[in-house]
Length: 481
Image (cartoon, rainbow, N blue to C red; front, top):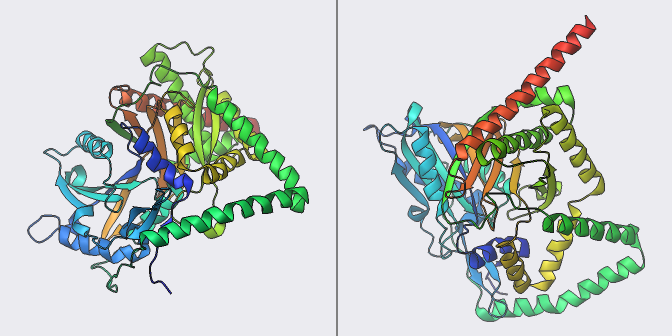
């Protein structure tokens, strides 16, 4: 029996590699910037003890096997698979740098933008940790980069909690020495692909028989899925371009904005909906203000669409690596001047999307790409490079609400960063931690040089909603009295 090991990437995971192959200006990794207390990580001479940090990271890698795996390719289809990296070197992945004095937040954001702009080396495990000294408030920053083919938002959050610990640690925990599994030969990889190709017609036939027999309501389920797929494709092909929806370049601007989850809940409690509805309504107000004031855009007939990834994991899949997402396409009411009406419009849309199971349309597309192969992915990617299926991406990932530590250094903030592609020059990622929701803004350096103006307008949009919630609460109290 062979002692070799490999794992085939799904076509959804592979799609992020294909996007990099087809679009030279795209870097398809997700990232985050963490800030931690610096003092617990210093040596006696005052410098950050990077050797101790490396030892700690190594001690956590048993919890994250993908971090010691590298890409290989099958001989017939040239499809990527994961294999253990027999040349793994922690010194390559853990990096150490410093901000120039005074080490303020603006300098950190610019550094993050430069690091976020560069692609990961496909010949190495697809992640990097940059430890940045010299940050204000006696903090150290950690810039985490992980390729999107390895994680989506939910599995990325799981990786973060695997890397950190819920209790402070003075020293790394003892672990067993790691031994890479043997890589499969080209013959083994080819045989695996032949077996997979041979099984595909049987799987298709089995599904057709299930539909014909209408097992477990298969016919209605199939009709609903294809109806969702048709609506999704219609939404994805009818979006209009706005001034910043142009082919992106390779350079990125990064900004972030913290927000109180308690205040978001105050708005939700006043007007209904979900926390994510409040986020989307806030973004709609921010984009509307930004387009009117900074881009002089007439919003009367604008249809501004955001792609919002939706977690499709089952409960027992929560810790699995890779991507298990579908996408909603939501029209943001950017022209609506009333913040409460914006929230109501968003809540109505998301309620209908949940009711119609709209995310299942993405599952149809994902299943089709598994059958159609890499060539279909390449065609789709080239089409996306010149069209605008959406105006922005907004992804909201729930994070841990308990304190986390790197050794005995407490994690203070987490700011997420989402990749861009095609003509989508601005994306927003949100991540919650310890009662705070951080908005992470990623933008093309040249198309959106005034990114901070969008951040400020988004903050003002949220303040409008919060004031409306206060006013509604005051009115309710007066009526009760």
